[in-house]
Image 1 (tube, rainbow, N blue to C red):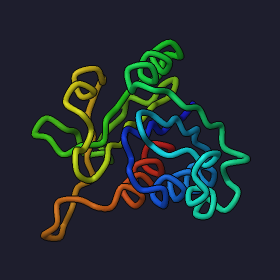
Image 2 (cartoon, rainbow, N blue to C red; image 1 turned 90 degrees about the horizontal axis):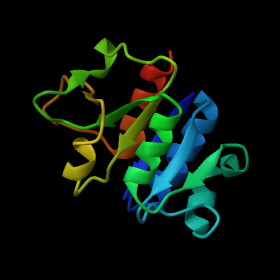
Image 3 (spheres, one colour; image 1 turned 45 degrees about the vertical axis):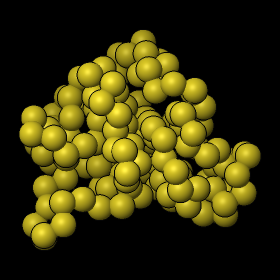
Image 4 (cartoon, helix red, strand yellow; image 1 turned 90 degrees about the vertical axis):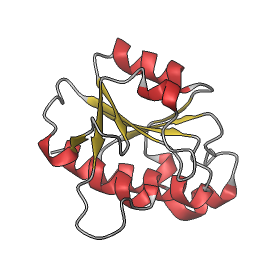
Length: 148
């Protein structure tokens, strides 16, 4: 099982983009905090182009609830974040029996309290001068890499 957990993603367009990518790559999507739902915010559906009807979507108020649900399913819970102890996503190997990856927003990132609850943290190695990508792009890369 593969789950992407969206924590406080502000942009409806980013959420729709991630839902569409999750559909293409076979991932479930769990929304937390104020991440907009395609069933209540039309802009999400506009970007996901109907993928919300085929992706297994769940809404949790708190990220901890989503993490607890993932751990009950014996999933490795991973945050996508740039911190010193993070593992390059292409080197990450703990994917059995599945993985849940948490993405935060581009201002607050993954919350500090959330980072304390995860099993590991991964990052995308970058060659350019920028240290990060848009959450839609980074989630696509990480879902692809961890879904192999």
